[in-house]
Amino acid sequence: MEHAVIHVMKSLGRIAAKINEAEHGGFDWEKDTDVPKWIADLVVNALRMANTRPGGIVDLQRAVQDRINESNTTQLRSPT
Image 1: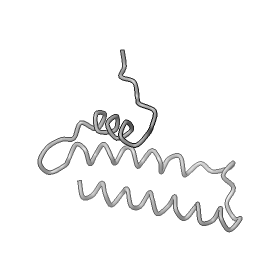
Image 2: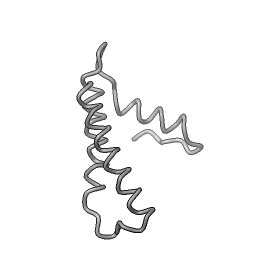
Image 3: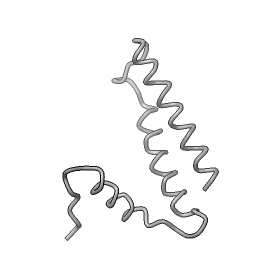
Image 4: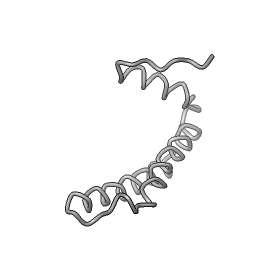
């Protein structure tokens, strides 16, 4: 789990750097191909953390659905 956290922090740092560039007018979001990969890395590493958590595996799908329902006024519908 610890190593996955390091990769999350690296991806967040890279995304933050691009946001900073954009705020200063030096980054073209239309031509960007890296940020989508780094966002995907966040999801991949969330799965790694869920699968390697000390004390047991986290049901990531359930945890995400619960979090969406807790954090938003619109509830996520269960698949039929």
